[in-house]
Image (cartoon, rainbow over all chains, first blue to last red; front, top):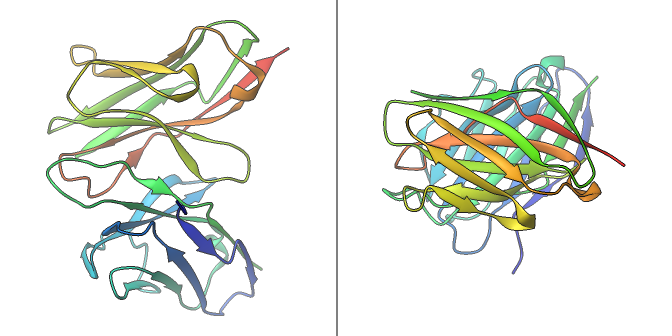
Amino acid sequence: GAGVSQSPSNKVTEKGKDVELRCDPISGHTALYWYRQSLGQGLEFLIYFQGNSAPDKSGLPSDRFSAERTGGSVSTLTIQRTQQEDSAVYLCASSLRVDRRPYEQYFGPGTRLTVT
Amino acid sequence: AQSVTQLGSHVSVSEGALVLLRCNYSSSVPPYLFWYVQYPNQGLQLLLKYTSAATLVKGINGFEAEFKKSETSFHLTKPSAHMSDAAEYFCAVTGSKNEKLTFGTGTRLTIIP
């Protein structure tokens, strides 16, 4: 079946602009995660959703970052007033659910964001 | 709190030689451990996982890893390296509820012909 998809694959934006990154999880997966991969910080957790709820937003680096998920499926990560330090690859993952038993997280190909 | 340490940011082995990538973890709860591989300009692909069943875990592409609680380790091995194994490898840990993965800093594996 189809894997996790992300769009756009690449995004170049000017400092100060807002950007939206989209993630389509694997069908039937109720848990969805956002991570960021950058040279300086490695792979870091941003936020996760169980259904449409986001119990843990602790990884969002500032209030310029927000995310939502609608219909228990597609998620959008929004970065307002982008800064150069936001340049990174944003990875989305999904899994069957967040539960007592950990399920594998399946990753999308990522969105490479470059802020100029 | 959980963390992962990967020793060696770069590892080079000859084709056909043993591959050993090291991962040590710290966790306040029983850990669940994963190895992921990332090829250039791609996302992460799951190689194998430890979820408290067998301590020796076999994964895809001939890789395996052994969970050693006494050493807090989960090292990744492959008996014979292939050129296609060249990639970056990440060890990751999560707790019982899979709320997030905490990753190591990664090890870039180079295969020498």
